[in-house]
Image (cartoon, rainbow, N blue to C red; front, side, top):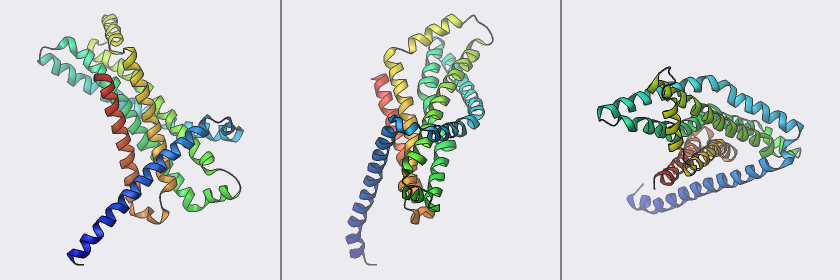
Length: 267
């Protein structure tokens, strides 16, 4: 292929790539809106739908609780020790507790819980949806008048949101206990100081940002893998490019949410 042919084909390939990315983002946004409407609709909670959703919530949440609790406790203990020792070495011991609470509970815990749920729960659930498409199960449901999004995607996405919020809340409690033990040990002498620092850190505005960030993190890791699974071309399934593109979009949204939350907290 000559240089002139490459030059002529490059703009076309760039426009085609931009078009695919724009279409993928639009499909993710559209599916998110559809699924939020279906979740808010009472018709999505019939007897069979409630049973399926309860099963998905249990499958995606219960098996990972113990492992994530242990991981969160270990992570909190290590980071708390590093921050405390570093602050003491610079003569900033009075700021150590405030810094640990801010770093662990506000910044790291929601993101860690969201990524853990994505890797262990929602991405495997998306793989299940792809397998259902490949086997023709979704098409068979649609032919029988059953909405595939309502039957297959909504329960898995709702379970992903529940798992992310549950793990974030659990890990926050674990982090608070671990940080206290790292600073004061098994003594109640520092309980008053610790609760006062906690109250000073969690102002109403910061608490609102924390809740919204956790909520949007959970929506992102629950919906983005479902969108990739539903709209991924099956002919390109083995190449892996579509899966990587879906992961990249999910991480980009998580990063954007984190940046916006940092701006809301510190600017």
